[in-house]
Structures are given as C-alpha cells and as structure tokens.
Image (cartoon, rainbow, N blue to C red; front, side):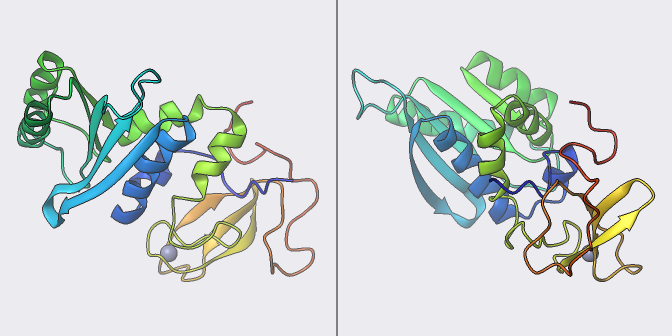
Length: 211
Ligand SMILES: [Zn+2]
C-alpha cells in the first residue's frame, strides 16, 4: 500500500531546495514515459535535459529542457540561452523550468520561439492532473530526506507528527523557532510512536483539500 504522507501543494515548490527541484523536473518527464538524457553544463546553467519523444526516430532529440533554479523572477536571458542551444542543435522545441515566475520579456520571447515556460505553480498544476500513483512517485523527489519522516520545507530539520485542531500534521522539530508544517496523509510514519496519529485521519482529510 502506498504511503501518503503529504499531498502536492504550491507550498512544496515554494520551499524546495534547488537540487530537489532539478530532480523533480527530470522525474516529471520520466513519469510521463518520456525518455530523457540529463546533463549539467555548468553551475550557473542548472540542468539541461534532452527529451526523446519520437517513437519512429527514438534517437532524435525532440525538445531541450533547461531547469534553472533561481530565487528571483527569471528574465529573458535564460530563454535566449535555451534558444541558442536549440538553434545550434537543430531542436525545434524548448522547455524552460524554474520555481519562480518569468518576466514579460521572457514570456514574449518564448512564445515567438516555440519555448514553453513552466514555473513552479504551473508544474504543481501539471502534477496534480497526473494519476495518484504518479503523483506519489514524484513526491519522493521533493526532499533530501524520505517522506516517511519528512524534513522541514523551511529549515531542513526533521519533522515530527503533531495533532492540531485541524487534525494530524507534520511539524518542525525546531518549533517554535521554525514554523514549518506539512499536511499528513493516512499512513503513520515509520518509527512514529504508537498512537501518535489518530486512526480517524483519512486520505485527503488534511486542511482544505477537496476530493
Ligand atoms: Zn523547520
């Protein structure tokens, strides 16, 4: 039975550390059944991926994906860089992924050059449309720790089960210094003290989730 310690939410992406965001971007295409090759051109350039979606020509790269982790809105320079690689390799499509938003200039250049921009919120929206098993599979990429005992999305310390007025949830072990929290699914975490999580908790019961 799949463990369901947390559901997808915008907050997960907000606080994702950069390595996890890159892993998640790669895993996203794998989960869709698209063959990908990943390379890391340089520290500043983030991760570059090549997608192979042409069944008739499996060795032909059909799209280049750049994953740029930036704390700020990404401007058109990143889109120009991706377009340069596409042009040099003769690849018709590009995808630029970044956790934050893109500038208007980035959007207009991308629209004119067959480049799709995917920011963090957009990525969560795409993931939320996947079948539940694929959503669960992708959850394991969102933290350096494993989700049975998740790490705090704000500070990286381990979390512990806590029962709040709205039901059980994960809270940072550094509370009250850190206010990190995560929703919790139906299954008790491995190693949790017996009885830490009431059996009344059911899938999707946490907070304002609708199902
Ligand atoms: Zn914390």
